[in-house]
Length: 458
Image (cartoon, rainbow, N blue to C red; front, side):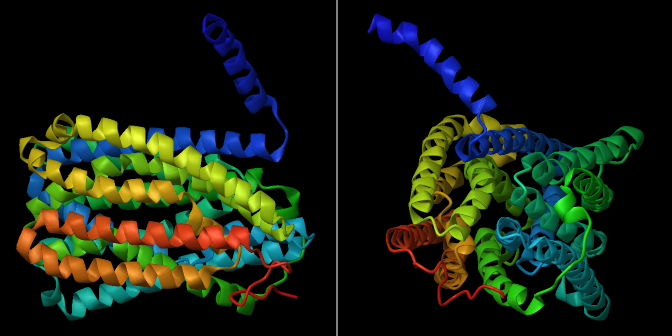
């Protein structure tokens, strides 16, 4: 035993040295996972700190208004790229693998135009609804919502450029602008108002700061990606296969729509049954226990491009090995993190304010669904990049239907606990079914690398 213990530091040093200096795909993927993991840890810390400070500065009611607006921004902004923010992780490695750089350049322009265009369209529609039918929305949401609409095109562009960074294996260019720079600028903006004014900041001030933070992050990310992208993507002719891109991205959009609805339906429904202060308490609880989700995000972000490359080579063995490894990287840290968050849940929630401690039981219920997702690993990402987006979307439909039925049934009776139970149940269903389908894909691959869901472009 003593010999084993003495050998551990040397072995650990060897592992770290191999990880930092290795040039094979596994070493690069692990470095990417560590980079994404580190960024997500930093972003989770910044986001948590900003939420605590915003809750303290604004009070429970105004913080509840802000969080409700933020949820709508996330839902619409993530959907505005129409699925291209996900399919870019598949198409760019695939096109470059097969020497089709012109198609890669065409897809990048197509995705940017789609993201900004539909973000702007959604903003215009939202403004028209707000002007034509103001009674549809409670008055305390009007001005914050109007500011939020200004965010949408920039938010959507950041989402698409996040996908570009992941497709190129540059986790820093993918994640830092949206997950580090944007929340920091938001926090600085609200802090400056709080220090300069005798009036406490409200939801309107917070969303106004978010507008500045979002557009600044989008500009910085665009400039950095233009500087660091290889010559194969910066110059040369462009080819377009819009029909194929739309066909592939449409099921992904449907899948993302259902995923976002499933993740946020509880908060959207709560608005009809509880006051904004209760929404704030629920939001604080779910954001606290969801801190552990950055583990799965980091692993998925770093490995999806390798899924795409393995699929392009028709290497089914590599797909299976990657999925199994990613599940291990996801589950163990997630389980440890959940245990720690549950043990410290009450003092963490108290940081938002004494009234937020009442949301502690919500964390236990949601932990069940998060753990199930961690056990499945990046199964959803594997199915998307291997052309099984249709069946993935079908699974999401089933999970969303279950989530909606349970939320509408349980929230009126059990309030915040009912919302948590509904969401956790949908997470478990999604994780179990996607995991089963992913196992079947890696066990019985299509020898031609295609499926009925996806016919490659000529």
